[in-house]
Figure 1: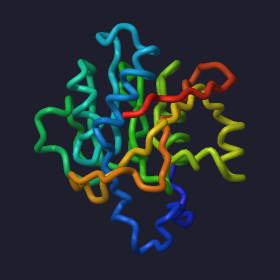
Figure 2 (figure 1 turned 30 degrees about the vertical axis):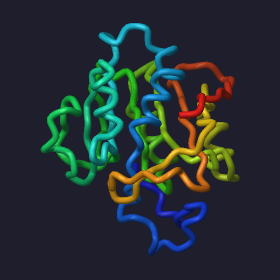
Figure 3 (figure 1 turned 90 degrees about the vertical axis):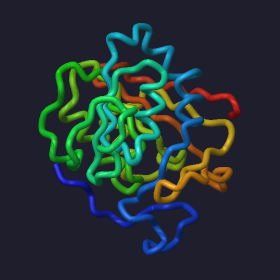
Length: 208
């Protein structure tokens, strides 16, 4: 499966030239912590049985926060910004997520902040290669709920949960450490399960 090459949809970033190369925007660790504490933990009772693959790990913010919270993690990315790191779990060599045609049979969750223009492709590919009953968790702009094309995605692959941040979250361009205050963008954690229910629950995360 190859990613869709459709035009960038970036909310307030109006020109493609203004988008970071490979759409690299780091996830704030506080955003991950809030989701772990008020959303994710309710679906995983025994951390020993959880192996999470982060296939667009960037500089490791999601992976590092998961490891710090006791989860087993595999990290990979198309661009090598991460193989020198020692605190992000097991490491795959740099590769596109779409080059993986199989998956470790022990992986119980794929969790990432994908390039926004490729998010649907990430979701569909995760479904294609994912293990039975595996969770697929994507950190996305809330506007991902909109659109005629994504209407078809949600018909094909119904969401199980959407965890909306009640405070604006900052994503750092190019992996910088200054996350700002999130500006005009609202974010949420979108959760699918390969053999889950066909209903969607909308939930809110507390301010952070």
